[in-house]
Amino acid sequence: MKIKTINTSAYTDQQPGTSGLRKKVAAFQQPHYLENFVQSIFQVASEVKGGLLILGGDGRFYNKQAIQIILKIAAANGVAHVMLGRDGILSTPAVSHLIRKYKAAGGIILSASHNPGGVNGDFGIKFNIANGGPAPTSFTDKVFEKSKNISRYQIADSADIVLSELASYHINEMKIEVIDSVTDYADLMQELFDFEKIKQLFKSGILTMCFDAMHAVTGPYAKEIFERRLSANADALINCQPLEDFAGGHPDPNLSHAKELVAKMNAAQGSPGFGAASDGDGDRNMILGQHFFVNPSDSLAIMTANAHLLPGYKAGICGVARSLPTSRAVDKVAEQLGIHCYETPTGWKFFGNLLDDKRITLCGEESFGSGSDHIREKDGIWAVLFWLNLIAIKQQSVEEITRAHWKQYGRHYYTRHDYEAIDTDDANGLMQNLRDKSTTLSGTSISGLTITLADDFSYTDPVDNSITTNQGVRIIFDDESRIVFRLSGTGTEGATLRVYIENYVTDSAGHDDDTQTALSKLIDIANTLSEIKSRCKREHPDVIT
Ligand code: VG1
Ligand code: CO
Image 1 (spheres, rainbow, N blue to C red):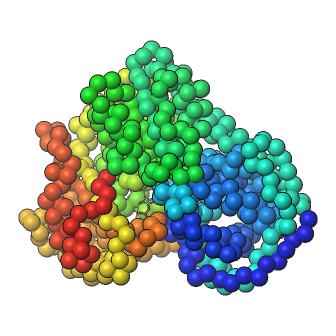
Image 2 (cartoon, rainbow, N blue to C red):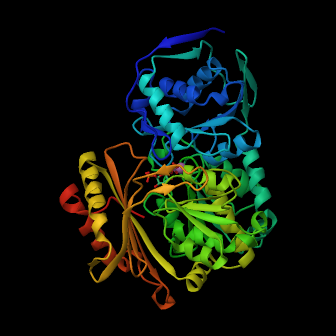
Image 3 (spheres, rainbow, N blue to C red):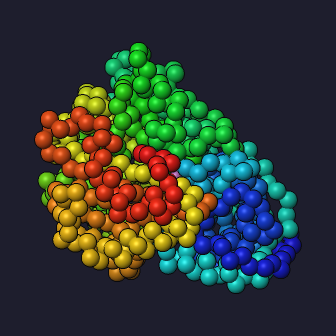
């Protein structure tokens, strides 16, 4: 088949953010927009030439069209072999696993994760490197540079392939294998966790669960793992049919967006003992008990404290990492275990080096993400299985496990306030003001609390010594409470300000408060310091998690 060289003009806005390039679908549908970016990736990722590429996405609108285009550009750029999820479906953790298992040179994931989908929704593309993890900033910077100067791309002049059948095809020399999206991943989960023990929980009737796939990518994975391999209760799975627009929903597993699940878990009668949800591309998780919410930062701390009890982690853990805004609950556990706790910027790409260098076994973020050294992405279903296995071992409820944890280590009340789609200049002005202020705040007092540290977080990677600056303004108080401010790197409309607030309470008599009430004084301090009301004309956050 012929390879065509197409002349194109460059776009100036193809800068990847926290997790790949994310834009409105309409932006990706502009002439040559996707093609330019993919060609730029192949130009930087020269290792993929002659190698294996894993390809798949979360099934959102434009997934299938994008896959056909990427296959043809891959063939024209000398990729030897592509493994592609059936129907174009692969979760982010599954791609990470496939890259590692089949020693691929890299992978392309089509997803805008937790952002809404559909014709008017968002689309995204992300490149993962040979370790299975998101490409580091040094790589994505180069792709951005290429994309700004591109004048042509190469594409095979071939027919579309059938995505729905497990079969092999060729475009020129390049082999395409359509593979089952689930099996390899499910097998890995079975190696890490005690499926027999979890199965007993369901068979004996001790536990019932509800898993909400939010009409996103984890539906097929949940069916295979929870229904087929673990024999969960018959009504365990909801919204497990992947849809291009996520049924109009927002596939973000939190208390605001996973409404159906939350209603079930909070029902006056007959609510399941365990509830969980995952996001668009399957890397996030929310864990719920009956009438009980597990804060993701607490979840990471609880996992760290108990990992050695689980089959996949019985050798113990060598270290742990959390992103800057994630609460410091896990730090308390690391201290007791005598292991190091690394503090990184936001986004999974910063954990890759620490995992590869065997400095950490577990890592997590406040944004409903946790994972381990089994792959190089966060992993939603993995987290759900971790909790199920823990419940099976401890024979305790989600709430009992969490409360016992607080009793032993103290409780970190934690909240995140998001102000979405604010004017970009206003948001930048607000951050600059905080940055300027932070240089003189240390040692001063506000509402009776003394500030012990205020700065704009910067990170030196201990493995490759790369430095990442301006990762968020943090303000730490003498009673161990803390406020962090940063702008989102995944939004597609204006700017999103995220304000992260936490407070540490050791006495278990003080562990029953409502989170927003417990944090009200700090919330006021955050509002005063940031001047959010006057600068951005916002009275209340759009989303509170
Ligand atoms: C958000 C979260 C961050 C997460 C990122 C990708 O980024 O805060 O913790 O790693 O999304 O998650 P930001 O820059 O908007 O705060 V997702 O599930 O792509 O996959
Ligand atoms: Co995601």
